[in-house]
Image (cartoon, rainbow, N blue to C red; front, side, top):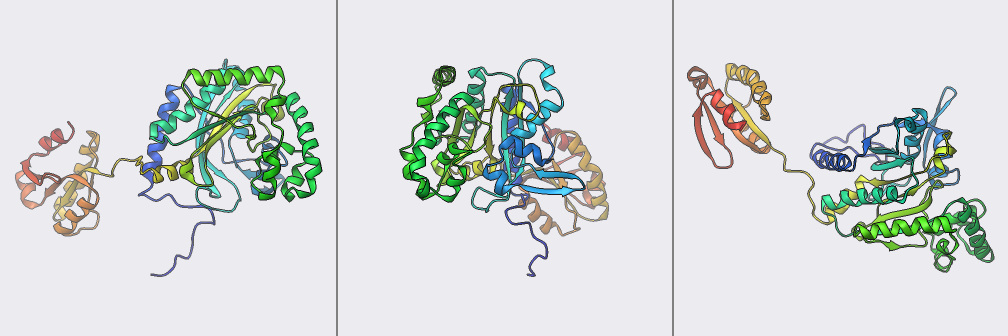
Length: 419
């Protein structure tokens, strides 16, 4: 067989017909659970202004410095969105969603793009779902986001996960901690990785997120931010922990958890699963009380999370969890002859209008070939029609599972299958 002339770009994959049902099943679960939590769906464009992403995520993050797909058209600079928090906040500001009253409880599902090295569970085009609660600094919002996140995985049947929790403090706490952290790291500067050396001056907390081997000893012994929170940040975090416990949501305190985006404040959390191997993150998020103002809105607190859908499917594979039901069609019309094919085409809408899924052969094949196709389509019934059936107006309905047949009128068949 000749090799295909055109293929997908590196790190971008096709979702084929056999795989689509699990995607639809997951999306349906997200929509259903979001409705129970009273979240409203928001959809933003795949392209955003480059400056929005740089200001929203942070100039020194790996995403902005190495991983965005950016391009210019005329005098405008665009980027394929690498995440959705900044775009959702942009939509909140642009469309004055604060005027709707109360906090805005929003959720999304969609593709993101990052120009990173493809590997298992990490593609250049990948998909996320997530929520953003904009307009409240109440710890209840933090807990509701975490509860919704965990509910999705529980609904699917994934139990082998760990919720890691930390507080990265408010701006005052962060600045105090950065000074302490830099003072600790300064004598070891020459031994830090090249990436951590670049982060030292402007973004030292990101050093704690480093995976470079030479950094690990210094990270392990580093001072922790929980010892440097002011009273307000400490009280907020204590309330989050208490509320999670009241909901019987187990968590592990992780003082080194800082998350990858510059916009995080106070609560930071991550959901991990050992079923994913070394790249064990399923989802993560936290509070970002400074972002709305950073991109042009009024000072507005917010909290949210994002979860990778491809990573969730990997966990499902490891645990042998099937999200989608087996593909099937209610009735396959086996038509023998030109008149039978015309009748089948006119009859298909009758089934569909009565809630019965129906299809027919498109290739004018033999009865044997059509029956084989009906088996491949996992048809529950076949309706066999030829010249004699058209003359008598009685058609053979075969139960493919029970191998039973009956001669029935089309009205009787529709009535039987639509029950």
